[in-house]
Image 1 (cartoon, rainbow, N blue to C red):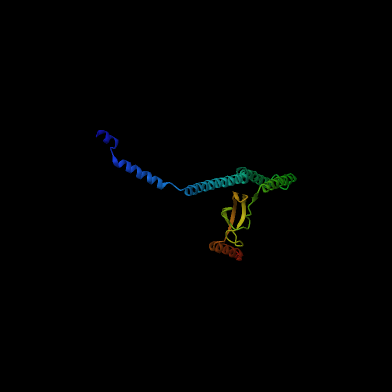
Image 2: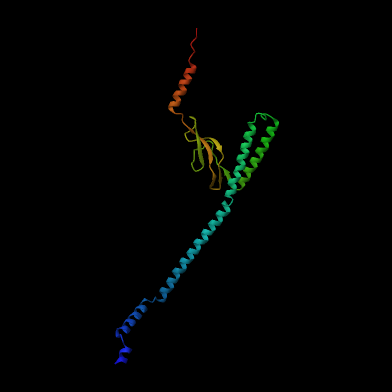
Length: 204
């Protein structure tokens, strides 16, 4: 009796094992399903590889096109210094109207033109500002100037040149823009003019 009990302590266990085996068999995919699953995995893996390739190509192109962005930005300081040098020389009372000043400014202009030409060859272009409508993407307004002959918000003065590297902004143009004269200021000017035009009374 003991041997029989030990041999089959739980008669329900064999039935449960059989049921679980049948369930596993039912869960097994058919060969066609397995092939389809593998094809899906392969398609997803290929799509991911293609996306990575495109990202790499984009990064490579950007590195080629804009890799010198920092250097180009620093180079603009040389153009600014040339402008400041010319301004300082032209406003030096000791050098005004002298032949030395004339030749020096001519040389500085040649150097400046050469530098701008080199920048253009490398896709760095000046931003057009004067008489253009203020564009916040390209211009930075530093001051307003009363000008009734211009539409408000028109660039009337360029304080510092701005530049583009292809379609990217290297630095904005620093500009002054026009604004209409206020009525208060107009009335004040008219009163001043009328007072100036009035005949002065003779003093006895």
